[in-house]
Length: 104
Image 1 (cartoon, one colour):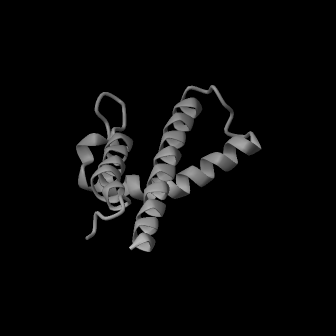
Image 2 (cartoon, helix red, strand yellow; image 1 turned 120 degrees about the vertical axis):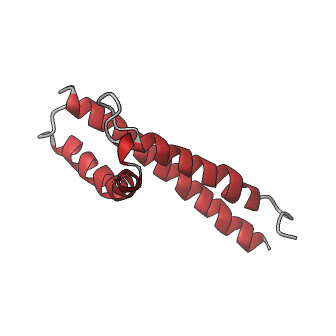
Protein backbone atom coordinates (compact mmCIF):
# COMPACT_ATOMS: atom_id res chain seq x y z
CA UNK A 1 0.00 0.00 0.00
CA UNK A 2 2.96 2.34 0.45
CA UNK A 3 3.55 2.29 -3.31
CA UNK A 4 0.06 3.68 -3.95
CA UNK A 5 0.60 6.40 -1.35
CA UNK A 6 3.91 7.28 -3.02
CA UNK A 7 2.21 7.53 -6.44
CA UNK A 8 -0.42 9.88 -5.04
CA UNK A 9 2.31 11.90 -3.34
CA UNK A 10 4.08 12.13 -6.70
CA UNK A 11 0.84 13.35 -8.34
CA UNK A 12 0.45 15.85 -5.47
CA UNK A 13 3.96 17.18 -6.20
CA UNK A 14 3.20 17.45 -9.92
CA UNK A 15 0.00 19.38 -9.16
CA UNK A 16 1.92 21.82 -6.96
CA UNK A 17 4.60 22.25 -9.63
CA UNK A 18 1.94 22.90 -12.29
CA UNK A 19 0.33 25.53 -10.03
CA UNK A 20 3.70 27.28 -9.80
CA UNK A 21 4.05 27.16 -13.59
CA UNK A 22 0.59 28.75 -13.94
CA UNK A 23 1.55 31.52 -11.51
CA UNK A 24 4.80 32.17 -13.39
CA UNK A 25 2.84 32.35 -16.64
CA UNK A 26 0.37 34.86 -15.21
CA UNK A 27 3.06 37.08 -13.69
CA UNK A 28 5.15 36.95 -16.85
CA UNK A 29 2.16 37.81 -19.04
CA UNK A 30 1.47 40.86 -16.85
CA UNK A 31 5.12 41.92 -16.98
CA UNK A 32 5.12 41.56 -20.76
CA UNK A 33 1.84 43.45 -21.13
CA UNK A 34 3.13 46.43 -19.15
CA UNK A 35 6.56 46.38 -20.88
CA UNK A 36 8.45 45.70 -17.68
CA UNK A 37 10.43 42.92 -19.33
CA UNK A 38 11.37 42.64 -22.97
CA UNK A 39 10.03 39.67 -24.90
CA UNK A 40 13.15 39.72 -27.10
CA UNK A 41 15.35 38.77 -24.18
CA UNK A 42 16.36 35.12 -24.67
CA UNK A 43 15.67 34.01 -21.11
CA UNK A 44 12.28 35.75 -20.99
CA UNK A 45 11.36 34.35 -24.40
CA UNK A 46 12.35 30.84 -23.39
CA UNK A 47 10.40 30.97 -20.10
CA UNK A 48 7.41 32.45 -21.93
CA UNK A 49 7.43 29.68 -24.54
CA UNK A 50 7.73 26.90 -21.95
CA UNK A 51 4.98 28.26 -19.72
CA UNK A 52 2.73 29.00 -22.69
CA UNK A 53 3.08 25.48 -24.04
CA UNK A 54 2.26 24.00 -20.65
CA UNK A 55 -0.55 26.34 -19.58
CA UNK A 56 -2.31 27.71 -22.67
CA UNK A 57 -3.94 24.42 -23.81
CA UNK A 58 -5.65 24.05 -20.44
CA UNK A 59 -6.60 27.73 -20.34
CA UNK A 60 -8.04 27.47 -23.85
CA UNK A 61 -10.18 24.56 -22.68
CA UNK A 62 -11.48 26.63 -19.75
CA UNK A 63 -12.07 29.67 -21.98
CA UNK A 64 -14.06 27.56 -24.41
CA UNK A 65 -16.45 26.33 -21.71
CA UNK A 66 -16.60 29.58 -19.73
CA UNK A 67 -16.33 32.36 -22.35
CA UNK A 68 -17.61 35.07 -20.00
CA UNK A 69 -14.37 34.77 -17.98
CA UNK A 70 -12.34 36.01 -20.92
CA UNK A 71 -12.93 39.74 -20.52
CA UNK A 72 -14.37 40.84 -17.23
CA UNK A 73 -13.16 44.39 -16.99
CA UNK A 74 -10.21 43.68 -19.26
CA UNK A 75 -8.85 40.83 -17.15
CA UNK A 76 -8.78 37.14 -17.98
CA UNK A 77 -9.94 35.11 -14.99
CA UNK A 78 -9.37 31.67 -16.51
CA UNK A 79 -6.00 31.23 -14.69
CA UNK A 80 -7.82 31.83 -11.40
CA UNK A 81 -10.31 29.07 -12.24
CA UNK A 82 -7.42 26.79 -13.23
CA UNK A 83 -5.61 27.43 -9.94
CA UNK A 84 -8.81 26.78 -7.97
CA UNK A 85 -9.31 23.50 -9.84
CA UNK A 86 -5.71 22.42 -9.29
CA UNK A 87 -5.85 23.14 -5.58
CA UNK A 88 -9.29 21.54 -5.17
CA UNK A 89 -8.15 18.31 -6.83
CA UNK A 90 -4.95 18.40 -4.84
CA UNK A 91 -6.53 19.03 -1.45
CA UNK A 92 -9.61 16.83 -1.75
CA UNK A 93 -8.33 13.91 -3.84
CA UNK A 94 -4.54 13.65 -4.00
CA UNK A 95 -3.41 14.76 -0.56
CA UNK A 96 -5.75 12.47 1.45
CA UNK A 97 -4.56 9.48 -0.58
CA UNK A 98 -0.97 10.08 0.54
CA UNK A 99 -1.91 9.36 4.16
CA UNK A 100 -0.91 5.78 5.01
CA UNK A 101 -3.89 3.59 5.83
CA UNK A 102 -6.41 5.85 4.06
CA UNK A 103 -7.19 3.23 1.40
CA UNK A 104 -7.82 0.41 3.87
